[in-house]
Image (cartoon, rainbow, N blue to C red; front, top):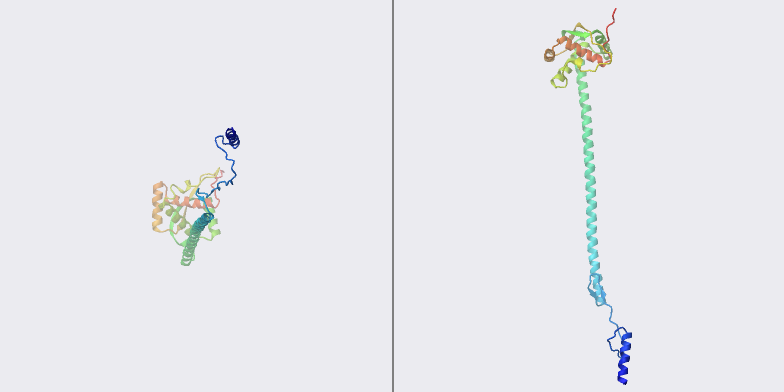
Length: 253
């Protein structure tokens, strides 16, 4: 009976401890729970302080390597950025230099042309005290008012008509040969509202034009079906138009 009562007591105490099938011993003894195992982030356990110290040393070495690679990449990126900005700045400077060179070349070319015109003008003036005596005698058909406006402009510019008309012919021939103009000079400008047709009248004067330019202008006049005198007259009227002249209807009575 005593043995049966003792087993019943053991079952009750085992059920209270959470293990119904376990037999609890009443003998006194010191219970030591199992030591909690420390684990590294990678999953391996550190069973001793020495192993933990080695793991710390490994992590420190890995960290030094990563920091070195990051610093190297940072330096490369900074160098790349510096080189890229420098290249972009050089491209901008190169474009600016090209623009400056083009502008300087244009200014030099304009000065050379002006100097050449002045040289020719002085040569013609030195060759004859009276510029109207030079050039070939020709007949032109030009409007009276346009002719008067052209003469006033020549006086204002201190030019001889013999040279000015010769220059107009040279410019016209160069434009024709370059394909820059076509048709009659009177058809190239826009007429003002109410502007009348010019009333050409024949005049005789001398024009300083070379044989080649004169021949080219004669061929152009034949192609247009007008006389050479009227072609030159229309060039004179076009020059007068730029000074403000406009053809008006003749007064009746």
